[in-house]
Each structure stands twice: as C-alpha cells, then as structure tokens.
Length: 218
Ligand SMILES: Nc1nc2c(c(=O)[nH]1)N[C@@H](CN(C=O)c1ccc(C(=O)N[C@@H](CCC(=O)O)C(=O)O)cc1)CN2
Ligand SMILES: NCC(=O)N[C@@H]1O[C@H](COP(=O)([O-])[O-])[C@@H](O)[C@H]1O
Image (cartoon, rainbow, N blue to C red; front, top):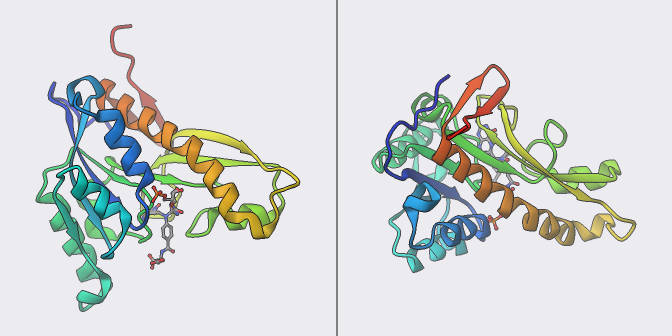
C-alpha cells in the first residue's frame, strides 16, 4: 500500500484518547507553532469517555474535540460507525490511537485502514490487549517496551512501525506496574513523536507485514 500522504501541506492528525493524554501532549509540544517543520498538525481529538485529562489538554490547545461513548449507541457496530463519522468529519490524513482503550470495528477500519496508528506499552507481538504492562510483568520478562504500529482488524497485530526497549529490574514487582508503565511512557512519547513525524514528512509504504519509511532527499 502506497503512502496516503501526497500533499506538501502538514498532514492532518486526529488523535484518539481515553486517559491522561501525555502522548497527545508530546505530539502537541513537538508540533508547537511549526506544523510545517514537524510535518503534521492535530486537527481534532476524539475520546470514548468524558472527563479525562486528554480532552482538557486538547481544549487548552484550542483543538476541537468530540466524544463518542459506546453506551450512547444501540450496538457496538453503531458506535463504530459513529466514531468513524466523527473522525472523518475532520478529514484526517492519519489517525493516532494514543491510549485509546477501545477496539475499533469494520467501519472504522474501512475508513482509516493503512493510516490508523496505535501506540502500545509492550513489545508486540508479546502482550497485546488492554493490560500490556501488567501481563509482561506477570510473565517475568527482563525487557519490555513500547510499539508503534498500524492498526488492522486484529488486536495489536498490525504492521510494526517502531519499537522502544525498557529494562525490567528486580525492583519491578507486580505491585509496581504503574512505575514500570511510567518508564515505558517516557520512551513511548519520544518514539511516537519521531514515528508520526517521519511518516508524515517522508511518506511510507506498507508491504505485507513490513512498513517502509520513505527516505526523502537520499
Ligand atoms: N481493531 C483494533 N482496534 C484497536 C487496536 C487494534 O490493534 N485493533 N489497538 C487499540 C489499543 N489497544 C492497545 O493498544 C487496546 C485497547 C483496548 C482493548 C480492550 O480490550 N478494550 C475493551 C474495553 C476496555 C475499556 O473500555 O477500558 C473494549 O474495546 O471493549 C484492547 C486493546 C486501539 N484499538
Ligand atoms: N492497549 C492500549 C494501551 O494500553 N495504551 C497505553 O495507554 C497509555 C496512555 O497514556 P497517555 O494517556 O498518558 O498518553 C500509553 O502507555 C499507551 O501505550
């Protein structure tokens, strides 16, 4: 699949969040007042719930927000279609799931397949799902980390864009999940900013499981 990013204008990003939104903040800070330099701008932030810091961060930055709650829809499929429509209204080039804690369905993927990026707090394909940090700790791994990947119709199974490694130490007890997650997030924020910027600036191709970042100027 060839890059959908053909324009010289900054890529339009819709970012989906469910929680504190520190990955969203890292993108906003990297873009700052130079979207041309970074190669992308955040045009909207969407969420599956109200009252989260991620939405407050968007409002602070005067970025439009939308909330699409499963319980406001008659079925999961209707929610998925509503989320797809609310996202499409902002005409994104790329959609970024940055701590978005819902599995999206067919309609969303039909609209944004090949341009929907997720960041996950484990080294995929190990420990997919909603509890990547807890599952890695429970397994007893000595290294873990984070993965930025394109989303497909599995859960955390799509083609990998970039990964970052974090050591697990003797101090990382099962009770210390939050502390390990915080160390992962320090690496993850930088990885996400770097990966999204490169995809947006230089373009990319997805061939099977491989993501090829184009090399502009080489
Ligand atoms: N179709 C896909 N959707 C999403 C993917 C994906 O790979 N394919 N990645 C996720 C993010 N994700 C981890 O990276 C993830 C998030 C949530 C869950 C999950 O089990 N969610 C439950 C609800 C949990 C809650 O509301 O707290 C659910 O969806 O019912 C698994 C993986 C983004 N979406
Ligand atoms: N499976 C999805 C998942 O666990 N996502 C994780 O939620 C955190 C969100 O942090 P943030 O709200 O501070 O950006 C991030 O670590 C992200 O990888």
